[in-house]
Length: 66
Image (cartoon, rainbow, N blue to C red; front, side, top):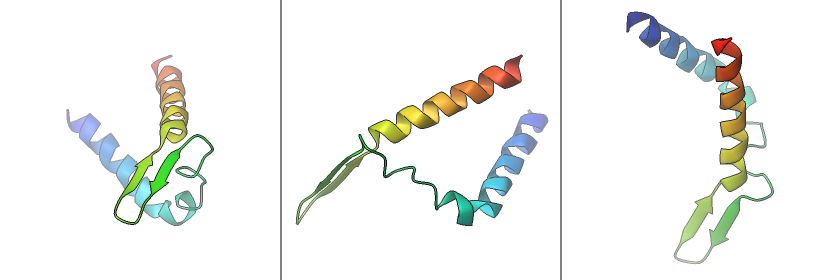
C-alpha cells in the first residue's frame, strides 16, 4: 500500500510540474467531442478524448504488466 501511494504521489507531482506543457495538448478539443453551447446551458461530452485516454492507459498498463 505504501509503494502504491508513493507512486501515485510521484505521478501527481510529475503532472503538476509538466502542467504548462500538458495544457497545450489538444485533448478536450478533438473531433468527435460534443459541445453544446446555449445561452443558459453548456454541455461538454468528451467522447473522443475519453477513448484516446483509455487506449493510452490500457497500453501503459499492458506494457508495465509484462
